[in-house]
Image 1 (tube, rainbow, N blue to C red):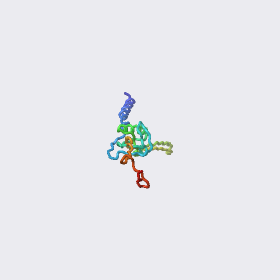
Image 2: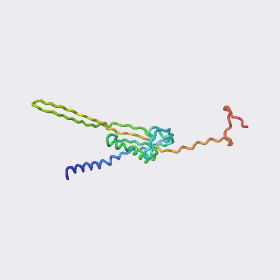
Image 3: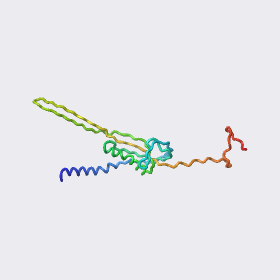
Image 4: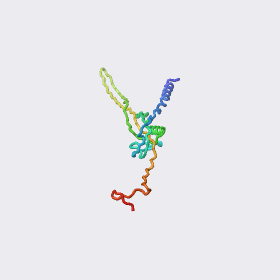
Length: 188
């Protein structure tokens, strides 16, 4: 077997081992347990991804129950990071559905610099002539931050609005007696 072929097989085998781990990380769901799980929302900015509402600012303008939270951390920079970030919303929608949610509410997100990578290129030219050296040189460097993206969302289930409360009826089925200037008016 040629040296080239062995090298290609070694790289291919390493890639086959590494590829399953590329998509393996997914959002982590934690169940919420507490008495204040039901809320009446006020509204906000929403978009829908894969059938799940993403509330990016504010919350749903209706009653909802908090089921838990989704935490996600993934690499953001370079080609690998671009691929991972492109699947973020679909991964979150899938995890929210699996938890029984109709929507998610953004609680916070941030980017963290986890390292720096760079390259330097140099060039030197020179001549030697009879004990005399003449030369010139140049160098060029480039560096780039390595970033991770971390986000946290609440997973919620929409609830039906409660029925309106019925007005209490007065005794005798006649309704409340009329009032005039805060005083009960005599009945005719």
